[in-house]
Length: 263
Image 1 (tube, rainbow, N blue to C red):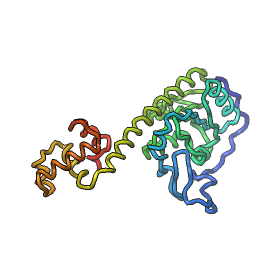
Image 2: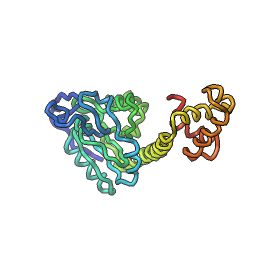
Image 3: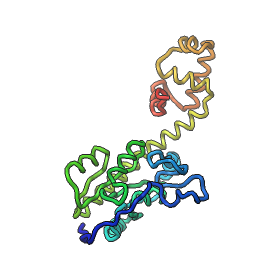
């Protein structure tokens, strides 16, 4: 894809990372962002992601490609290309605008310029990674170099494209990004379903489950928590039934997905 040559210097604009919706006069205590809802005054690295179940249930929603580039002509050229293959786009000029727009519920891929006014694309990628927030990113730039490319790819970027690039290279990268986001959503949907089952367990059943998946015998568990062995058997049966686990290895895999050891 060829891009119009930039004329003049970019206007430097200062952003605080929050956007207009974060003004003291905002009527709402919480604001919707591309990553979900946040409380006013919380830095962008502490944003609360869109509830996982909400996004997971939106797997059938039409994918959205979000373009963030401060050049209006580039945004229009990219939008036209992406729409030509039947995908919907949202074109934005900066990271703060991106944060305040609201992330689509369905599969998403971000086409992000490296050099942006205020916060750069690479800085934003680093913040997302530090906050453990997953957004597939394709970087585009007219001034790329090897260190930039290495940093972007180490940070988990799908691709790093230098302008001008082939249309098909971008479209292929977008399909890869969407496939990765769909896989992430599918996994989170499964985890959300497991979490819902886990929430039906009583505190004692959760305690028994945590010990069962470590390989402890009923007699050992009874001694650990001070109850009878028959009571452990009853709780264990309830755990297997409520979690819909057909075997101990299946229950152990569920515990791994729920990160019970970490909890």
